Amino acid sequence: MRMFFGIILGIILTVGAAYVSDSLRNTSGGEGTFDRPMVNWDVVNHGIKVLSATVQDGWARLSGHAKDN
Image (tube, rainbow, N blue to C red):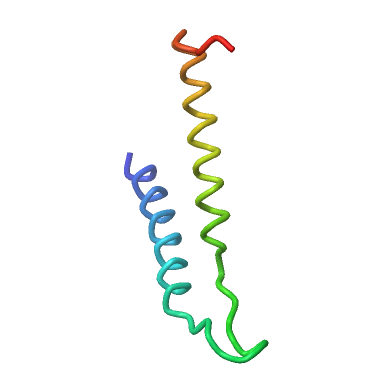
């Protein structure tokens, strides 16, 4: 159980550190003078929404609550 908790905590800390690092970067300035963010958070958000929809659909099929199309 400790190992599972440690893995989850490590993932949360890694994502949190990337988010803080990206939010503190200077993205203004002339062309080519700004640092690119480590993570494209719009892409991450889209991926999470797709994953969530896939899991919900799979659960609905497993539990017999799938919508008839």
